[in-house]
Length: 224
Image 1 (cartoon, rainbow, N blue to C red):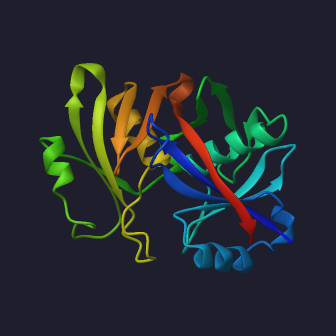
Image 2: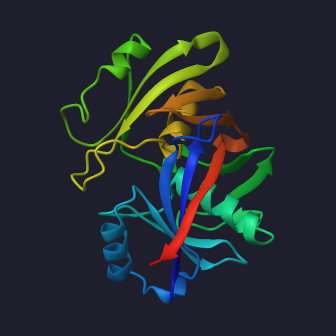
């Protein structure tokens, strides 16, 4: 029987919140293509990741409606899980390209590029209260990352993420790819409070890369 690990990624300091993630470690047990898309749709997580080769870090990522070349919270989550179960790879390989990963204390970090998460609108608001007051989702189409400074000098941000894909994910609790895009636009490290209580850290890296990091918790394992 194929096992499904259910994680929460980008948890707050108390271990609560974070974005749920489904991880299928035995990816080859689930055929690629439409079968994986159907599994992801049935599970209903904002993303599900299939590990095709744990040794090389080769992974495949799906939302309930689309396959993604890159996504932050699935890669942070699967890096943490592989490191917990064995010696995790130093580089993950989603379709977008090689993603270096590392552990630093309670935080797991991955490195990506804003170009790997195209089509995301970053919309700044005047205050965190304005972001909190937004309907879920705001009117319009396409991926929206609504944000405001909480403390600009310290790089503290309040954000909410709205995929607006029509696939049942009304609001993303924590979104690593959008955090990478925002960090690339602002050109500085950020401490992002997203959703109901998730925390995402980012750091600009060399050659236009951005690191994104967070805490991960295993909620349980069940049969797929």
